[in-house]
Amino acid sequence: MQPTTIPALVGLGFGTVWMMIGVLGMAAQIQAASAILVLSAALALALVLWLVVPRPRRFAAAARAPDRAWLRWSLGGEAVGIAAHRGDLALPLVGMVVGLHFLPLAKAFRRPMLALTGLLVALAALVSTGFAEADRLQVMGFGAGAAIWLTLLADRRLG
Image 1 (spheres, rainbow, N blue to C red):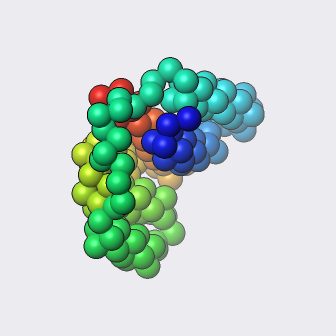
Image 2: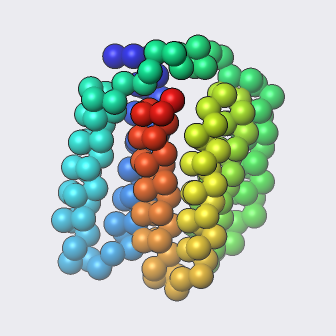
C-alpha cells in the first residue's frame, strides 16, 4: 500500500458519512436499501483507490509534512462555524465550515484539488439552504459526499 492511500481512504470515509446523511433524508421505506447501495459503492471505491488508481510516484514528494500555520486556520474556521449554530441551518452551516476548512488544508498539504473539494462541499451547503428542511439532508449529504468522492478520485488520478 502506498503512503498516500491511507489519507485517500480517510477521505473516502468522510465522503461516505456525508452520503449516509443523505440517506437519512430519504423515505423510511428505502433507507435500508439506499444505505446498502451507498456502503457497497464506498467499498467498491475503496478497492479502486487501493488497487486500481495508485497515485503517480512523482507526486509523493508533495505528501511531506503539512504547513502547521495553515492547519491552525483550518481548525479555527471549524470552531467559528460550530459556534454559529442555528437549528434549522445546522447541517448547511456544518457543511459550509467543512467545505471552507479544505481551503487552508489545500495550502497546508500542497494539494490544490482539496480547494476544489472545499468549494464543491461549500456549494452543496449553500444550495441546500434553498430547500425545505426535509430535503436538506439529501441535498447536503449527497452533494458533499459526491464532491468528496469525485475530487478524491480525480486527485488520485491526476495528482
